[in-house]
Image (tube, rainbow, N blue to C red; front, side):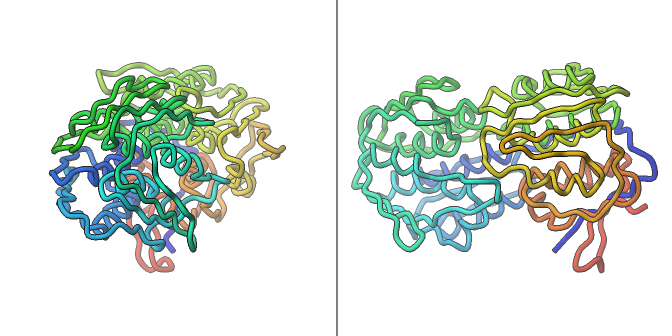
Length: 430
């Protein structure tokens, strides 16, 4: 197990510039979409995170070949050698479910293990299954696997009972090769969904309504090659925006899409931070010496993202008053609250609400990362916790953040990565 250790003699004020990586949640469906064609798909701005490597390993298991050079990837699924996504790969990352639709549409059969990933509450795949059945698939659950078959999927109308990002992505990919027109209603509006649709259009798919709740997909017989740039990671950008606000810093974020960050920008502005555009793809975040408390409720895009809930909770521990965060997306996403309490935070969990009483001084301690975004929140807490903070089990962090410690080192943070029981260290040594 690896860990990160942050040394804080006095609270940091982050100053400087940071370049945001490509979006993990955009590249994973783009990689899955490569299964829809035997031609090459070229992707740029690839984030070098663990989840990308997991997906590439899975695609190689299915028969795809790829070449990754720096942040440029060429992938070809000319021959699909297997229609089975094995448990040992799928359990590591819930997004592996995204191969279900493409495999079924291209090969007529898909056997995909029920997914794993972060332990942040119940995240069923029933809407994926129901939607594919509506398109004509026969689906069974056998021994922990989804077994789906269809000679060729047929267009249909389907309305999601609730918004689901991966569910929308799976059905859009499946419908791209279905016979006839598919109408999907109550689709997720996240930028990552639109990015996938734009890639599919470049491959030859016929999709109307991109960025809207209703998508119309007219199926085609074949899809072809395409080149596509992965959009910036709005959650990584949001994490660094909170870092600047939390530390009273002055931080310029490069390679961002400001429009994707509006919900967080609004909340940070209310909390006292000043946020300015600093160029076409850049923003500047200037923190305030007094952080104002406020209530936040997570919601599907364009609402406040659940993936920023943990990071915002850290900010509220340093606000001058009481705040309430309501989590509406996942039912068990407050595990990080216990770890923040170990650092000195005053947080009470009341069902789907977290009551945070600030301002509480934080002091360094040894804590445990429970999921991807919880890991990020503990890194943020370490920036304002006096003394030494050690964050264990950071394999979660590596799933979605590209070399976060190296980016923080460039901003003056004394942080190091501990490997193999502290025998090997990387990062910024104190």
